[in-house]
Length: 124
Image (cartoon, rainbow, N blue to C red; front, side):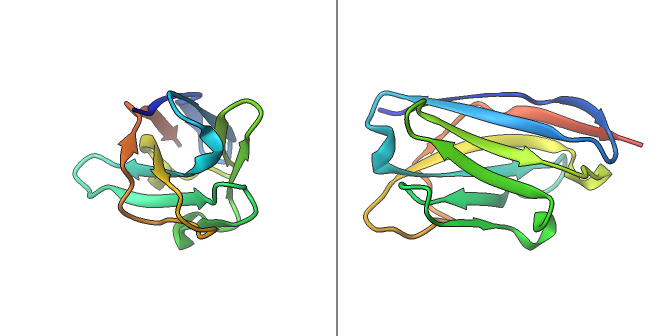
């Protein structure tokens, strides 16, 4: 079993930055591709960013491209989501996700493990 614990959410103003962290325990961290999803009130959950098990490959959704960056520190069993130039529409609960990696690809769907979520609220 894999446990994911997110932190770093909060209330910020438009244009500010936040960094979300997700600490993973329970299995070998480097065996897992990681990612972030988000869900705004009344909307479907959507993919935000993903990173391969080694960290060599990343992908972000078009809606956050140029503003959000995903990274991982395999020595700390931690994945990060750096969010810059935050917009009102970035307000959502952000979930850290993990999936056992069978190749070097970034995974955008079908994750097996989910964290409890951390709230990000962007105000004007």
